[in-house]
Image (tube, rainbow, N blue to C red; front, side, top):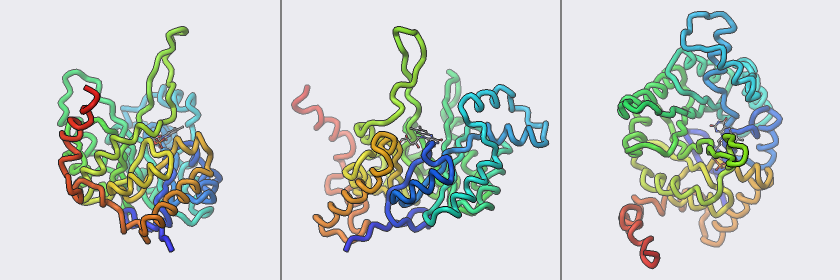
Length: 327
Ligand SMILES: Cc1cc2nc3c(=O)[nH]c(=O)nc-3n(C[C@H](O)[C@H](O)[C@H](O)COP(=O)(O)O)c2cc1C
């Protein structure tokens, strides 16, 4: 008998497949569809910091200088003009509709008063919060340490307001990922989701328009997450979750082998439909039976760098080996 249950930030998941934040989880109905399809947990569509700030502005407080009315227009154009109140309602309704963990998601760029909103998310019953920190450094003279400090301030600022677990979804572009991961943990992250996938920019050379062609990931994109989860496993003091490029059971198994406690999936569900959740679960279960593993714990992290007989394989030697026969 195979047991797919896993523990993640103190939450018990009946299986390690989490539906990642997207329009699939933008309503209680969407969340219910994901749960009915077999998901172990869901991360709700993000509430953007700008939405909270817009709401705060509209409700009463005129003293937030960093708010611009264009932000609201922008959000409306993106179809994201649900209010912060609506978001709380979605959490409440989702919690009523399903019995799997419901993780709220905040997409943010500044450390500001909006962070207090996390309290309300906790109050209406979200099991955890996932923070998607979408800082894009573009100043030529900005000190990297200052940027990292800014990210850390956001994490600690939100953490200060809640007692529920706080997952932090990071992008892959840091000079020192180990340091960033450790600092995020120290600032209050209960888990790290590695990695966020930024919108891919592209250009249409016929219309000379900016486009966003690759909305969905490909399985080839998972290797960066695989490497870093493998390297950071049991080094940071909090669980890690794999994200980006996990499209099938094989991808999920690889992530669990290098030490991810769970995987977040999104693109594959847009491409194949929600039935892909069960396909992935069946593949994991079949593989576990073949290998005589009774539980996720039996193989979780066995191919991390820490547990590897060849720890150097994850570092420079891997690169040199990969070139043999090509160069
Ligand atoms: C249509 C769409 C909407 C998304 N919206 C959000 C969002 O609101 N917040 C967020 O943190 N990530 C969002 N994401 C990113 C996904 O949650 C996920 O991190 C990313 O797609 C990588 O996972 P994947 O390779 O399984 O797709 C979105 C992705 C897609 C395709």
